[in-house]
Image 1 (cartoon, helix red, strand yellow):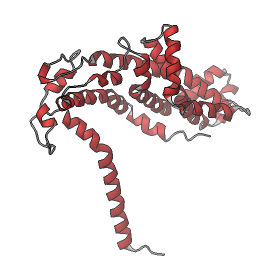
Image 2 (cartoon, rainbow, N blue to C red; image 1 turned 180 degrees about the horizontal axis):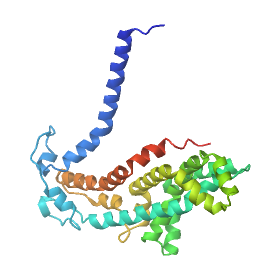
Image 3 (tube, helix red, strand yellow; image 1 turned 120 degrees about the vertical axis):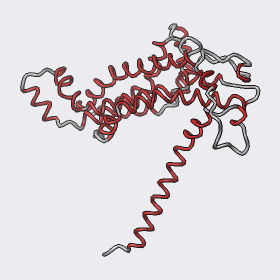
Image 4 (cartoon, rainbow, N blue to C red; image 1 turned 60 degrees about the horizontal axis):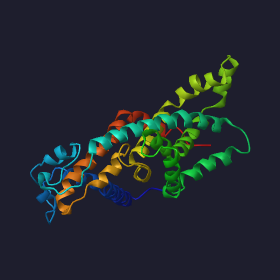
Length: 291
C-alpha cells in the first residue's frame, strides 16, 4: 500500500515542528541565563525584556572575586565565596567519581557475573536505595557526621555523596558488563588468567566507553547535588551549588546579572568534561542495555 505523499509531508512538518518546539523549550532557559549574565542591573530588570543590550562584563568580574562586598557595583549582596565553593565542588566532584569507580565498578562486575538467586534481589536493592529521598537520609546522617567529625570536611562530603552515586553507577555498569560475552572471559581463564586479570585486562577495556559515560554522568550528578552539601557543609567544604544561594539582594533585580554570571560559570566544568569525552559518552550510552 503506497503512502500518500501529502500526508507524509504533513507528518514530517508536524514532527519537525514538535522537535523544534521541544528544543526551544529545553534550550531557551540556558540562552536566557547566558544573556542575562551580560546585562547591566538596569537591563536585567527592564520590562519588556531586552534582547539587544550593551555587554556588561562587571557581572563576571564580581562573580570571580572571593566575595562580593555589600554595596559594590551598586549591589546589596551577602558575601559569597564563589571561587572557594567552585574549588570545593571540583575536589568533591572528582573525589566522589574516584571513590564511586573504585568501589562501584568491581561491585557491578561481580553482580553481573554472579549466578545466584540473590543476584536480582541485590540489584533491585541498589536501585531502591537510589530512589530514597535524599532528605530522608541526610538529616540522620548530619547527626552521625557531627559525632564522627566528618561534618564540613571533604572526605565527609565525598562519603555522603556515595549514597546517591554508588547505586547509580553500579546499576549502569552492571548492564555494560552483562553485555560482554562470557565466552571471552572463559577463554582468558583457559589461557591462565586469574579472575583479577580477566577483570582488569579483558572486561575493563571492553567496557571503556561505558565506563567513561558512567564517570561523566556520575560527575554531573555529584556537581549538581544540592541537599547533601546544604545539610552537611558550612564553610570549609561548602560546594558551589550551595554557595550560589548566598546571592541575595535587598533589591532582587540588581543581583540577577551577577547570579546569572555565577550560574554560567558553574555549568562550564560539566560542559568541558562532557565535551572532552563526548565520543565515549555516545558509544557508552548505546553499549549496555542490561540483562
